[in-house]
Length: 187
Image 1: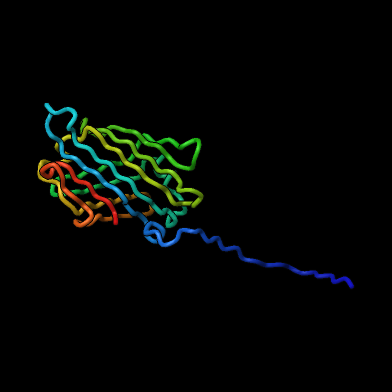
Image 2: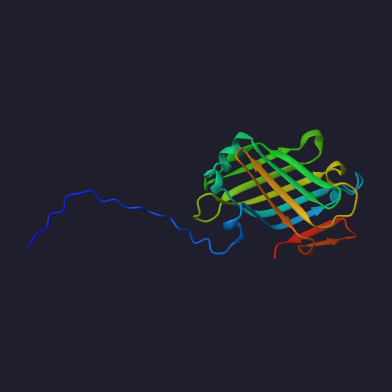
């Protein structure tokens, strides 16, 4: 017995990613690590101010426009840690990565206030989820301030259609070296 079926088959495909209960899967930005150091003065060239941070950015709200925005120079990052430490930069000097979906950026801050490297790489096979890394060096006192560093530390990333932020609490941040260095780790 043969059956002949004529008609239209309609189906819906829903992509479900194994993101689990990771904080960055639900929110836009999750910072896992942040280190900041005060500027110690010109005679201490190896003690210039610095900022290192690592985190995850979920870019689903803009359908993955982060890389295009980075290359176009329309992404801004702001980091506030302690009473005087305030790093703000419009990320520029970006090129697409050839080996993975992502971008690598290198630039100097205005007024010879320091330089930074920023990288966003797609996290494993998850579309629109990126691991981000920022390394800023040779930061002068206008950015780091001169007061002791203390938590909380707040990071805000703004791109064309979205603003995302995350705060590392006082409990997650530890001041070291008489307040000249701040180390924050997410729980």
